[in-house]
Length: 207
Image (cartoon, rainbow, N blue to C red):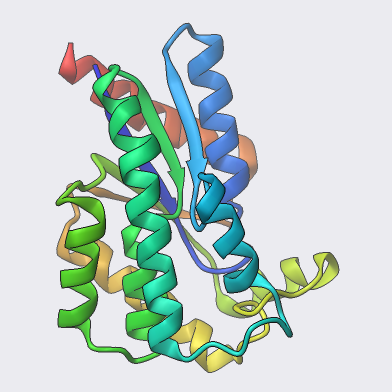
């Protein structure tokens, strides 16, 4: 009864909070679940996360940034996601391959064909059964993050984040069956209720 659920969205949308809420609900309901995240989730990934996220750290080119994300993803898929899915668990990932398309493709302007190819390699063709997009106006999201310190991506200009948001919405429009778009300004309890309803529905279908 494995299920792969990812959470996506631009800065400050609350996806990490909702991913944790879903994981806790599943576990408390007796449903085996694993919560992980990108970049990171493995010893190598966590080391690379510090390079990728730190503001004022490594001065990375856009291509180097992409390649580091791909390495993180390949390691996470091989060491965590696929093994947990094979055990029949619900795997919840805070960001996945769609983040790279949105941030490095739409945001940085790297070639989409190259990104798609690299994502295919890193994921071994694995796609989420459900991707939750918490959509939020860019300025509101950045204001939410302003009190908690700024990383390399949060420090980018509004235009960059607008491109990322547009990218997410275009990706969701292409695969409406996989994506669940939720207004991130809704109360946390309402967002979690909507997510829970969709996840339980998918699990019931698999039974």
